[in-house]
Length: 356
Image 1 (cartoon, rainbow, N blue to C red):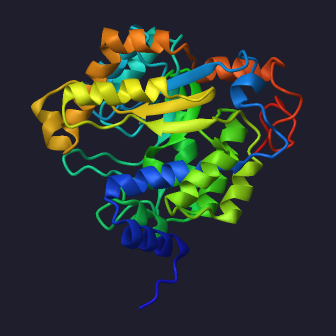
Image 2 (cartoon, rainbow, N blue to C red):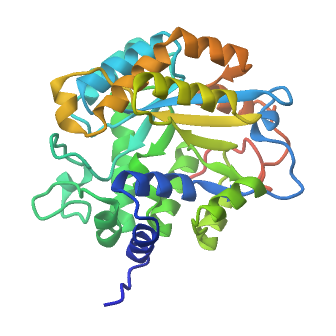
């Protein structure tokens, strides 16, 4: 029977053609929809629009899943303190959120973002969403638990319920004293449908918190097409009107079959960075039996923490001329007039938050 739900049709087509694993499909959703079309007349990368020197390689290293487990929290704290990562994403729904929020209050100078979690992909850990406590919600299954997959979410939720949950999660972080600098979407769920993307990007403008939106150059567009990834015109148009700073590229930390290979692959990513503003996403963690039970990718996460702390990696970054930045600095530059007079979409830069 032909599927009549656009999000499901998209997921089925992607899975059938590319035979993606669940994790790879989510990464595709996250990267593919976080884009906007750059005007062919605009040659400046966002790093230069934000006042960085021409040709500078500017990098955000973003560690995700703070608040999920003690193992993630400990890795994130250490890497932030030692300036091995420049940004973290926090799940306010996570069982270990209060632990990380307490640390945030004691270290307010760091870069903290809410990673909006609408699903829970893990079987070993349970958590509850916030808005269903106030009444019936399409965000949960018959047992009151968050949906496990993006496909389930896209087939079930209403945009109004997503908006309430998104507001609740940002509010929870603020009430906990977390000094927020940005927001993100956990496993790309906020971009699984056009109306959900509109809610998410609307929240970024409402709270004046930037999100990792990628400016799509002709080169990146061609790369996605070669890989067979469709670019939905409506979604692209929606994101093209996003008024806050954008990334020039977004990458995920490369995998490796051994630690030396993992480190070599990451060093290669660093050396081959193009000039502009890039974000590399990682999920570092401290090794434990609990982590092993959580995810089949536990070894990659342990290695990611080790790679980022490795002195050879730090030397490679220095030799490549990479400048680390974070979302706080990006927004300071954006708001203080160091950007061009108008953004890539023609909107006025630094216009400030808008009413809901």
